[in-house]
Length: 251
Image 1 (tube, one colour):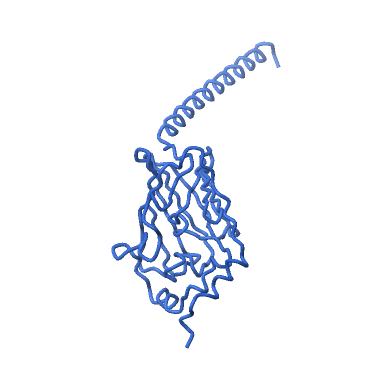
Image 2: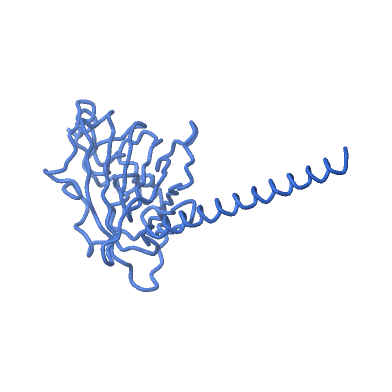
């Protein structure tokens, strides 16, 4: 290689390096600007939220479902409902509540927001749900009682989609006798209105429902310094209470 060729090669290499660094810097600045804009629209959901009796109507047969929004059941769901009785409810064996019931149970909830996930911890049954924000997808082994949740921020709203539930004999709620299946899909939309945390929940389950069903509820800020209570369910004591329930199958 001649001296001239060597110098030309070095100049070209240095020029390309400079262009690469300039392009990388420009891309980094643009990315940071986009991220800054994106994070400006993220609602501040952090904190402990009160969903107790003083905040919303007591849950039960008519709450949050009523004649205007009660899900339309198919024949399969009606058959399950026909044979249902309170004594078979898994809650008496300390099985935690699942969606869409746990969101409405009259307890507190704590929300923690991280860059790649949102954590929803429920005082009821001491349940923790992780909402992934990093684009990951569930695998074949990610089925669970609470399902697999992914989320995205859109227009000052956290939108959560949950799939991969396991079959649950009381998966709809624990008082209407409606189960839920592995086909259940849950969509939750969380937003802030003043000091109030609002949520609209939509439930789909073609195994038992003829069409999607939904309800809207709210939480208010918990008292200053409030910490979630420990939910201590004793299986023996819980199941013992069932013996006092009359069975509809008794003569």
